[in-house]
Length: 94
Image 1 (cartoon, rainbow, N blue to C red):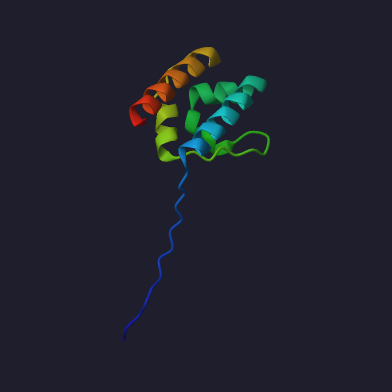
Image 2 (spheres, helix red, strand yellow):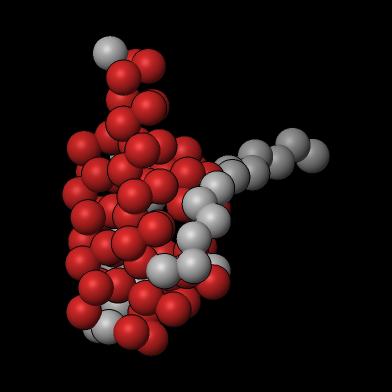
C-alpha cells in the first residue's frame, strides 16, 4: 500500500527594511513603557515574542540574533549599541 503524506511548514521571510521598521517600533514601545523596556533589556526575544499593546514585532532570525548580542544596562546604551551594530552590518553589505 502506498501513502502520500504532505508536510506543511511555515517560513517567515522578512526583508531588511521590514526588520529596521520593526526594530524602530520595538524601540518606541520601550521608550513609552518602563515594563516593556525592562523586558527588552533583560530578555529581548521574550519582548519580541510578547509584543506590546497588541503590536507584534516580526523579526528575521538575523535581527533576533542581533538583539540577543546586545549587552546594555539601560535603553540609551541599548540604542547606541544597536545603532552601531546596524551601521556596521549595513556598511558591510553595501
